[in-house]
Length: 367
Image (cartoon, rainbow, N blue to C red; front, top):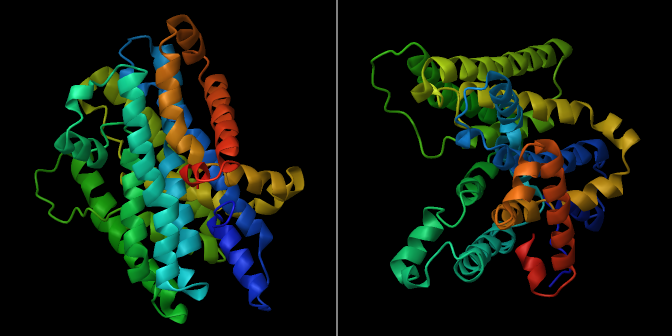
């Protein structure tokens, strides 16, 4: 067993080297993926610390701060899924489907199962927020599949679903991939995002039966397209413009709805919502296009080493937050310093992940 499971971009580099291929390794693009994973995991922590859904004050100034963080970092989970599409829709060019499933089992399913068990026991014996008597088979099953141990697992179940569907998509002929993925991207964008968004915005009383459980595949296709397509200047401008407009629609629209009708605060929420998709794709494109600049400012080894630890913060930050809440004064102080608090938690999670990776068996917890 290898000491540290490879990230997807590391798998590509290893494959190219071992097979003596003449294909040039695009280091800046790979750095963009690593950096995207870093800001994604940091963003998830910030969202949960920000406490947007727990905010009930009529203080407009404070609400706009909370609303800004919620809106800006809403890209976090989508960007992570975009990375999956960028790096795995061509996995069949590097290894077999058996190897693919083996890697996903080790990197995703085992950590997800183990962390559910660990956090369950942690809540029973340390936090005392879960009663031991409730740990029967049915409840444990529901805790796992309904993400009741920690709501962060909701996002990880999205990853599981997309991982299972990727082999079906990856074996499209290489020459046809871009056109086929573009077709399905716009099809999903229209059916899963644009039409439902317009129906909601304009309160049109018509039924729409085409909402799919696999709607998140839109990010898989978008990740591959953005990562591999050489956009012209005007195309990049349009994507950035749409992303910026989406951010402000999300930000200002949520504020307006909050003060006018709190029941409508979810109008612009949901990762399949049109503003979320356009905002996230613009950020992902920005990272790809500016990867050379990132390389000039930060050593690539530092970025890759941090990126290899980023699954750790996804699993670890929530129990750490729940533990800190035991100390109300400390938690309240840190809560009102959102960015500082999230940076502290992020660094702490990276440290714990680094230590776990040095320990046999436990390294499987932080793929």
